[in-house]
Length: 427
Image (tube, rainbow, N blue to C red; front, side, top):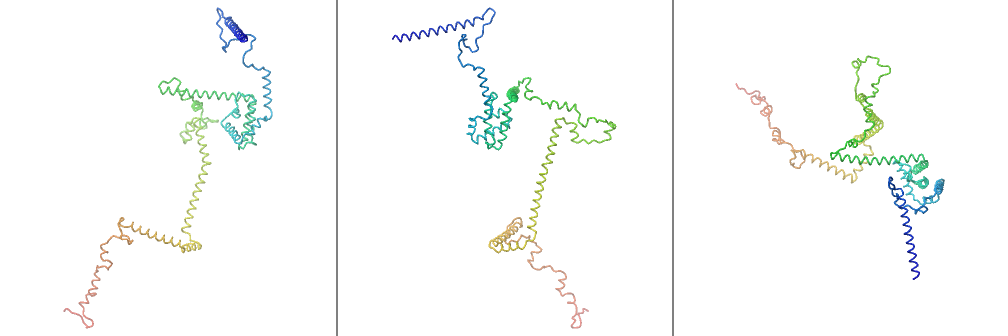
C-alpha cells in the first residue's frame, strides 16, 4: 500500500512539473508575440509552420541536416564510383538478363532515337538525377545492348547511341543545352494545350453568336511569313525577263511590239505573273515530271515491249500449229493414236459431234424455226412453175417441135411420092 501511494505521488509530481513547463512555454510565447506590438506597429505574423517557438538551447525534433563536410565526401565518393569499369554487381545483374530483354532494350533505344528523343530518354533517366545515377544507367544499358552480347541486327547502332547520350550528359555544357531544349519543349506543349482550349472556347462562342474581338484570329491562326512577304516581293522584285540589260536597249523601244512577235505561252505568262511561292511550286512540279519521264517511262516502255513480244510469240505459235506442215514423226504419232481404242472413241465422238452440229444448223436454217420432217434437209419454198412437173420434162411445146411432130414439113402431106415418079397435083 505504501508503494502504491509513493507511485501515485510520483505521477502527480511529474504531471505538475509538465504543467508548469507548459505554462512557462506559453508565457514565453505570449511575451514574444506581444513585445513587437506598439502604437504604430502591426501585429507580428504567426510562424509559417504554425508551431510554437522553442526556447533557446532546446533541441528541435526531426532529422538533423548533415554537415557540409559529409555531403562533400559523399559527392566525391559517388564521382569516384562513376569512373572506371562497371561494378561487379551490375555485371552480374546484366548477365542474368535473357536475350529477349536485351533485344527489347536495343529496340527501345533505336525507337527513342527515331522519335527524336534526347539523351535522357535514351538512358531512361530523369534530369534531376546526379552523375552517379546516370553512370549506373549507362553501365547497365551499354552492357545489355553491346554487340557481342545482344543478338539484335542493329545492336551496334544502339550501343553508339547509348555512348553518345552518356557523353552528352557527362559534359555540363551539353547537358545544360539539353535541359534548355527539354524545358522549351515542355513550355511549347503547355502552350499548345492552352491554345487548343482557347480555340475550342472561341469556336463555341462563335456557334452561340457571341464572338469576342480576337476569336477570328485565334481560329484562323497566324499568317505564314511566306504569305505575308509573297505579294510584296512579287510587286517589288522584277523577274529576270524584265530586268534591264547591262548595255541597255540597242533598238527602238517604241517599234518593238510592232515589228517583233512574242509568243505568250503558259510558261511565259507564268514567269511574268507567278509569285515566288507559285514559282517554287511550279518548279517542283516540273522536276517531278522530269524525274518521272526519266525513270518511270523507260520501265513502262520496257513492259509494253515485253507484252508486244509475247503477243508476237503467240501469233507465231498459232501460225505454226495451223499452217506449217507436220513432220513424219508427228504424222506417225497421230496414226498410232487413231489405231488405239482411245483414238477410235475420240474419232467416233468427233463424228457424232459433227453430225449433231450439222443437224442443229439445218434446224436453225428452216422457216423461222418451224418443225422439220427429220430428214435433215433444209426447207425449200414451193415453186408453181417447176414443182407441178414433179420431175418430168417440160410440157411446153415450141413451134419447131410441133412442126416435127406433124411430119417435118408440108411436103409430107402435099408432095408426091418419089417412088411412084410423081407427086400430087391439084390442077
